[in-house]
Length: 521
Image (cartoon, rainbow, N blue to C red):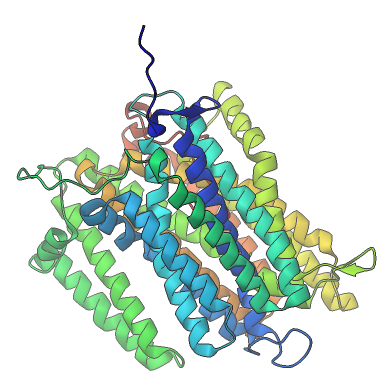
């Protein structure tokens, strides 16, 4: 009789590979650092330069503008981060580099200097771009194709995300309020150091996944590089014309009508023009009517993503400032730090994720409409209705000079229910509609759409300084509800254009258990 000793990467804990728990803890601490910093960023920017806890003294509009740029770039950076991992260094090394960049970025933020502030943000953007799109791929790689434990493994992994976000909302917020903003940034850095230490110590458990891709002489027919698409884009009449017209028009508009950050907006509009031209190029390359029809619905789903996150991401911006400046935060003689209210979203996710998933399963078994588009549209409507409570809060503030905390709690509840309806199915839906040879690229465009939604959120928040919170919150509510109802009214023709994609193709992601978090997929 021979005793077989399992290698480290083959060992299991509670029925799952030990590597899952290494990645769980890495992601938990990474999200702790990211959401801890995100929760206090706008508050630090707008805090007065003198006083017990001095900040940078920016105007609300300036702070929300930076917040919009920052959260957009975090998502857009995921595109090159994914490409570098897939084509050059592998996911495992990309996560390692991303973690080191994040340690440096959060650490530098704790230094009270302007150069340190911008350097820290730049390093965090690059770090998240390297780590975020690749660590989930490592989780998937721990399981063989068809392993029934895979979905449960992802559920465990995403619990880590929300536990990290919830802890950050409480701990970092209290530390920043009690000991200063830079102490909060420093605590976020410590969280990232812990995550990186766990990841480096647990390498032996993930030795078999995410390694550097092997170079092969054969080129798969379905592989399409971005370079090839751009080459076609600038050599075909229609895509080239679309790109040039949009580039010139948008640049002139930015130069003529935008007062601040002209260069930044010109670069931003040029990027959007390139993406739109690329979308036109891909449409022209599709051969069958089925692919073209599905692609049209795919583009609409990107619009839904932009609308959803454009409203939802007020959480870290405008609603964060509202909690700081307009809300009575006294509870049992203690003033609750404004950033603590960011706790509600991850807490509600942990609380309601399973009930919402079970509701949609029950709804589907009753023979009711339960398509991805229907769920996403309802998610937008429910999330939009959450701003009704912010309207009530604004009315109360105008009447008595402060608003109650429960309005924020109720708003975040509806936002989270909306997120649980829309976010878990969005990525799954895109994988079902995307043309096979453009599947990976469409994931990149999805991240870009999410980033654009974050930038839209910043722009909406900026406008509140002139229009007022009551107008902004009312406008978001009305727009989201009308937009969601419009999508539902177009559901039948849109479903025809999908050609039963949801029935015919199995997705890598399970619609009810795929990961979701505050503002991230």
